[in-house]
Image (tube, rainbow, N blue to C red; front, side, top):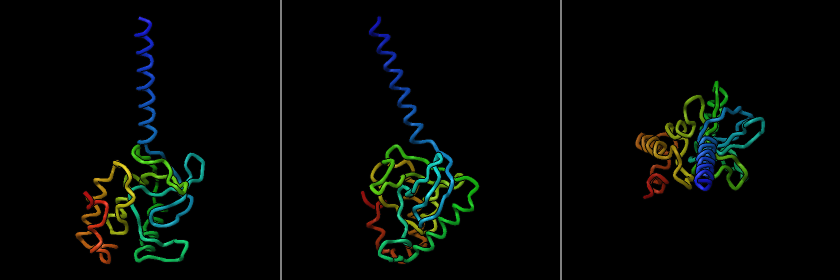
Length: 174
């Protein structure tokens, strides 16, 4: 009987830890904009700590780069992101349980929401981003691929100039 009780207690502890872990990675936390960087990166205050956040699952053309190269639609993406973040009543960060918490540059990786809208999805919808840097089965990746495909078909933003590169994109890889 004693072994059974110990087994039940251990089982409950494991379930409790899994629930906490799931909620930790999949819950949205409200954050505050500190400053904009570019189309897919910004500084935020997260639980009182200043953190640089790289938006998960997308890449926007460069507007800020060490070698000074500004890519076509880079400033458009940067301006759009900054405008959306500055006008938002609420900004949320959601971690993805299938992603690392930080990238190799020490940036937080997560989904950024303005209100209830995924900012990555908004950038893709107007052609200011492409789905990239997908290293796991991310929560919103299927939706992002759908949105990107429509922007591609409508030849919006980057797809006006990169139309022939679409076949190389993450969403097209089998």
